[in-house]
Length: 213
Image 1 (tube, rainbow, N blue to C red):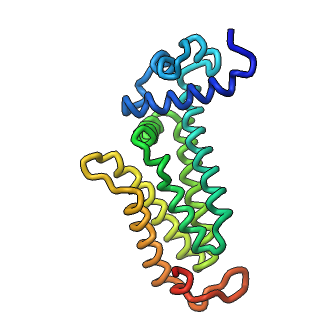
Image 2: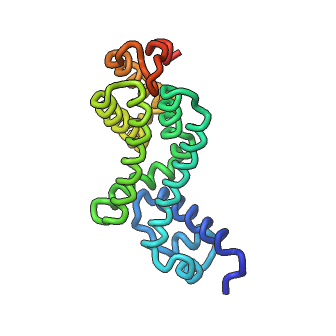
Image 3: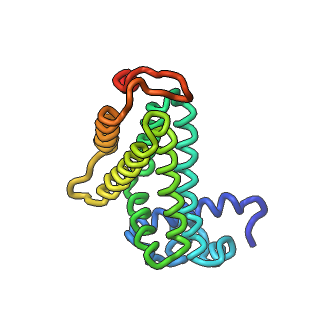
């Protein structure tokens, strides 16, 4: 019988184990026994806490999304301007924890699973909408709405594309290189699209060159 007070610890251990096992296998074709063994608990205990492998996998993707959200909240609180906030979003998207090989493999496995699982697809749509919304909120402070929406879509696609390229182990792009490429994209589009002077909440701001220094 599970010890009183151990449930949060065991649940986290199983989620962490699921992430590692999925990463090792490169797919969601893992068993509850595989995950339980990695976590150092019995399959019966794993079923007690999550009911089924599917429920554990959903909790695993929730865990990834929660970590991304926590990292974003912390980073955005430290940013002072819309341009700094955009850079914070980019850097969080390429955080070292997200670039761990098992985490990359898990994300790719979940994207594949989304082709047949409506619940998995729903969580990935939440992620995509959150990323776009975060980018768009600060781009709208710098640009007209139509330009902001176009650049937000492009930046989000670049972030996802560079992340996926990490799975190409023969020629991966590192964290700093991925950040630099995305920043170059934002800088170029902001410089070519931004009106002058910029306005934020009705107040004139510095030129875009000043925003990027």
